[in-house]
Amino acid sequence: MRHCSVQVRGLLTRDELDRYNGLMEAGKFLEEQNRHDLAYNVQKEVDLLIQPAIERLKDKSRQRDEMTAEYLRNKAEQAEDQ
Image 1 (cartoon, helix red, strand yellow):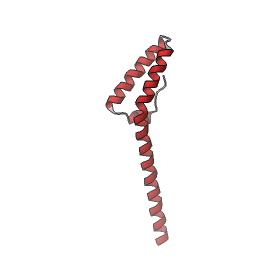
Image 2: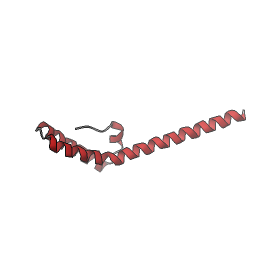
Image 3: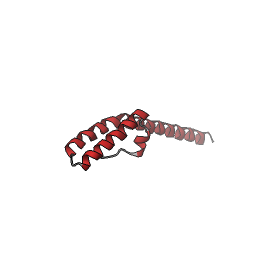
């Protein structure tokens, strides 16, 4: 089973995180039983579950980029005024 990144896990809601942990535990058990065919289906569910958190991470990144651009514009304006 492939885990998602710590950043994505940090943006999961409590319900999403509980479901994520349960699915990972089930998938690990299936892999230990060499039921990779079923573990594959569990991994697909995990991938679907984490999509909203990935979008939240992208949104945070876009916000940070906008704030950086605004800071640079302000800094350029201040330099022109001097």
